[in-house]
Amino acid sequence: MTHTSTVNRESSTSYRYRPVLFFFLAYLFTWIFWIPAIFTSENLSAGLMVIGLIAPAAVSTVFILVSGSAVLKQDLKNKIIGFYKVKWKNVFLAILLFAGVVAGSILLSLAFGQSLNQFAFTEDFSFTGVGIGSALITVTLASIIEEVGWKGYCEDSIGNYMNWFWESMIFGALWSLWHLPLIFIKGTYQVGLMVNPLYVVNFFVSGIPLGFIITWVYLVSDRSILACMIFHLFVNFMQEKIAMTQETKCVETIVVTIAAVVIVLANKNMFFETRHVGRLLETLQEK
Image 1 (tube, rainbow, N blue to C red):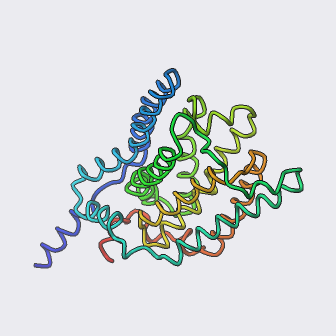
Image 2: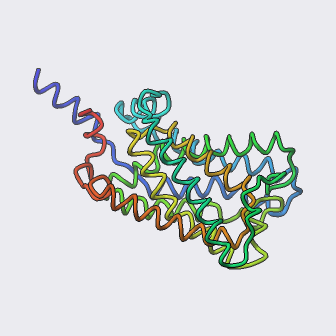
Image 3: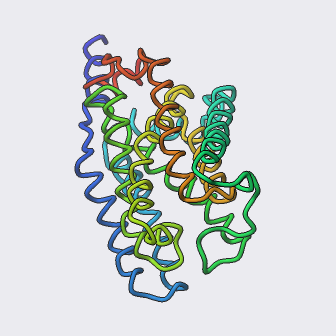
């Protein structure tokens, strides 16, 4: 009986995460739709962008379904439908933190000649080609679909091989770079950054500290995808609907970085522990 249990345990935790292959395929199946969208009309490019947006979630789901690991499959179910896992107090704290980042950034920007009018809501979304209702749906779907891909498989696949500090650094950089083709596609928020190279650089740099905050939201809610969806949606909404200038968003990157540093220092045991390294699935089975 003991021997059988050991065999079953080993077979269920012997899966080897493949982060390099995951990112290669996620980038490939996103960019093969986004790059052609650069050369098409806005209506057609909108459809291509949606298909590309789905790619990381699709690749993540396929990786898990063909993994042969019952633990990995059950973990995905728990992360998606395990509403009980969400630590609502922590999600609210993360939302409050980001709202504070936005408010603090606007106030600091006053020293650089920016206006208090930035506290107002914008009338429209920054990307064109869809109505306000459709734009809101797009922002919501983006938050949901992205997190299924990034939290369903991606972050764990990196975290299995290193502590969560370095995982956050690598994930933030790769997640940010994933958006690259969007700066060339008509009607996107990112294409509007091309008026100034500093705005483009700021957009990609800002993804790194934000990666730390999202990883924190993920871990403190016992790796709940729902918690990350809610936080991601709030971030997207604030970035779209609060009338911050691009100059202020450069200031915001500095403030977000400070917030990320504070979070890491306040959660050193979480970000620097190595008990899970090389045995992430085993630690899941132990819970």
